[in-house]
Amino acid sequence: MTAAVRVQGVEKAYKDLQVLKGVDLEVERGSIFALLGSNGAGKTTLVKILSTLLKADAGVATVNDFDVATQSGDVRESISLTGQFAAVDEVLSGRENLVLVAKLRHLKNPGAIADALLERFALTDAASRKVATYSGGMRRRLDIAMSLIGDPPVIFLDEPTTGLDPQARIEVWDAVRELAANGTTVLLTTQYLDEAEQLADRIAILHEGRIIVDGTLGDLKKLLPPAKVEYIEKQPTLEEVFLAIVTKGGADNAAAKGAAAGVDTEKEVAK
Image (cartoon, rainbow, N blue to C red; front, top):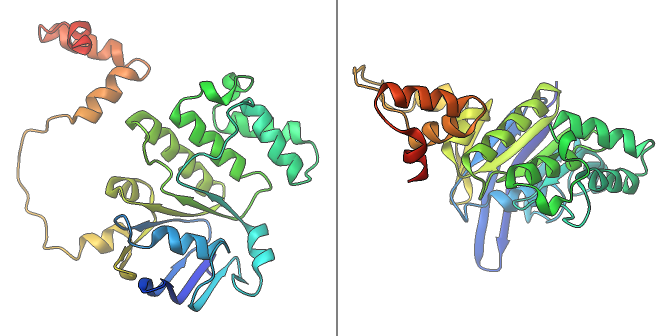
């Protein structure tokens, strides 16, 4: 089976600034591929080239077996791109946003398509609410749902959890996992190491315009010396405490543990 995305020797410069200096990578169909890199590493530039928004200066790139330079129309029909900021209409409701996109794609039964996606992304209860009232995680889930209208085989997610709180990030992670479980190929760019660790089947690190590492999480861990076994007391992180308290049933569990330890949980949370 051919790769869903293949990049060979891709270069891109903005005047005197060489952003991509010969990038090579392959993304297997139905997998989650994480492209790691710091700000300015060239992640978004590469995604724009793969989604036909930019032209490469050199090299070859194919998406779903179509050349991004010579078969751009076929590439656009094969992909969906979710940028760093949710592209939703706040004046419309969640359902209206989905129906609008389905109509723009000239699909039959746009209402049924919208309802199915609302259920898939756990947004049915908020379907009739204006998007202006949605939380960050809900907006991002709606944004991803809109990207799936038309069932594109490949989706690009450019730093999808930037600016989201811990709970919203986990909501988006669950949505991305479901995409791959349903056969969608996901190329995810991120600067969050834990995000790549949680989601990706394969990880590449883009640094100073080149892929310097490409492999599974296990492959990457082998690049460091073997871990030493040490026995230490495991303390919960602040993120774990936060999620335990705010998620369903978490507050009751936290209160029970706090009472056993002589801690007034409500007062501590208020602080």
